[in-house]
Length: 307
Ligand code: UDP
Ligand code: MG
Image (cartoon, rainbow, N blue to C red; front, side, top):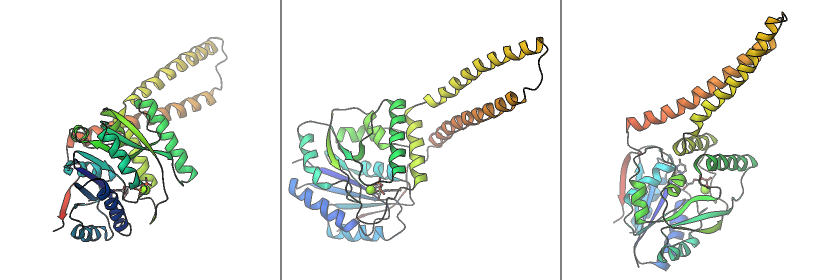
């Protein structure tokens, strides 16, 4: 049996870690004798790091990495991948919403030669209507912009060593793991799972964090929004020509009075379009700025491997 690596990004999960690790271990023990688990503590504010260290003392296959602050799940996944030594690497959440029972099936597909095994959500579990709507809108726009259908995709994946290497070679700092792992290609299959309830606490993603991730995903996979600005410009040019002719005709016929409504409307519409356009350009410039600064994706403050 070849070696497996499991990468688990963790943020404030002190109550959950023990159960998660023991469940994953019992599944892995059943299918391989050589594996490593890399738990990345994404700057948790609770006792997660102490729990990880205690678990690492009991579990020789476990290594912990601690970030100096919260850098986000995407950075935590990349940090885990960069330390994965296995022939295949499995990425999964720490809250058991990605059922470890699926791992044997995923490994089987990989052994049959598939390079990427994606676990896709059969249904999204219990979520507020607002979150559901937001997610569905996000994936629709993402599909239009990038051509990747990620609707049911999750971060629960098995990647061959080759795929991990390709991902690690991406120089960009702001990553969107789900999109990038589709972008790299390779042969892929899907396995379905139902998202179980979270056992402890609530989702660690705030609305704001989700919106930031969505903008980062759109802008890293498409520059179409920038062309959208040009498109609005052209629409307005056509409108202005029509209105211009009308105004001139009115003037020549001596009827040019009033017209304040038009002026106000035009000012409002033009103003908002200009601001949206500038904002869009701003987002891309900010991205370029972040990439040019070339700061590291994350900072590791501690690493821990049990005795
Ligand atoms: N997570 C992380 N950094 C963050 C937020 C979340 O590493 O800033 C981890 C979290 O501990 C969990 C996984 O990412 O292992 C998924 O988070 P969560 O279950 O809160 O998200 P959801 O299931 O609602 O998508
Ligand atoms: Mg979850």
